[in-house]
Amino acid sequence: MIVFTDNKKGAENAFTIHREWIPEDYSAIDQNLEPLIHRLYGDKPVYRSVSRVSGRWQYAFFVKSAPSSHFDLLVESSQSNFALPDGILCIAGSGRHFHGQQGRPWKAQEGNIHLSIYLSPGKKIDHYHAGLPVLSAVSIVQTIDATEGLKGNANIKWVNDVLIQGTKIAGFLVHTHSVQDRVIAVILGIGLNVEKTPPLTSDVFVPEVGSLREFLPSTFSIMRKKILKHLLEFLDKNYGLLLDGRYKKLLDFYRKRSLVIGREVQIFSDIPNKKQITIFSGTVKQIGDNLELWMEGQKKPVTEGRLVLVSKKRTDST
Image 1 (cartoon, rainbow, N blue to C red):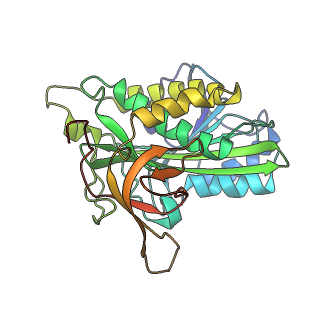
Image 2: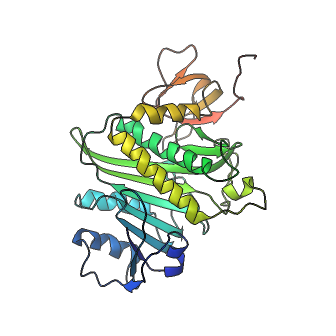
Image 3: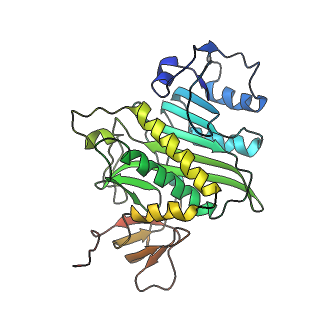
């Protein structure tokens, strides 16, 4: 994988670099990447090296401090240039104007993972509307499971939050572009708090925000580089399952690690600049094949909204 950066030390904290850094003169790169590179780095000097990362990742762009969301930048780039090469990673050490669903702010702080991905499958993908969120959630949970001292601790709050003991650790965004039944472009945005807890205002939807560091004994070491390596490996593996038509395997894992099945919840409307109102209250019976929530006593599923956990998970003895 070719790595570009405006900060060699920062990039070395994200990837193991296997060649000496050289100044990038743009003479030998895919021309479709040039507009993206200029948007990422502006007039800053850019350096290039190589990292031996397994999987389908071809290019990684590390930016020490991003002035705007890399997820938004990749969405804009994909809309104007369908010839972007497959397997692009954008990683920010820190940044401004990063966000979650519906533009809600996400603080991008040094020490955490801020990853945006561009993929160009160019083929039909069954269940891709649900499959890509499931792929993202499952990959994050598996990454946390692979971190010593954290196996089994992470769970998924419908639809796109990952929590440990009620504390939000990670979230993700998904954007796709399709033509008829072919998925042309996929952009994933993942924020995973590793070393630092961002200063975000809590509410009923996100009562607490934390980082992996908080859930490990002080004697345990935590390496962002190693966690990023695991995350990229799981994303590659699970994306392969999705392409191979094995969505059910990912969905089974998502359901197994769901926080909402068997729980009483409230679901609120989630329309930008509109007052949030309760659209449903009740107990979640099951998560459907397209991530819809089937509620006890209801004939129609809930397909959208913002969820609040009301009760603890029921057991057979309650």
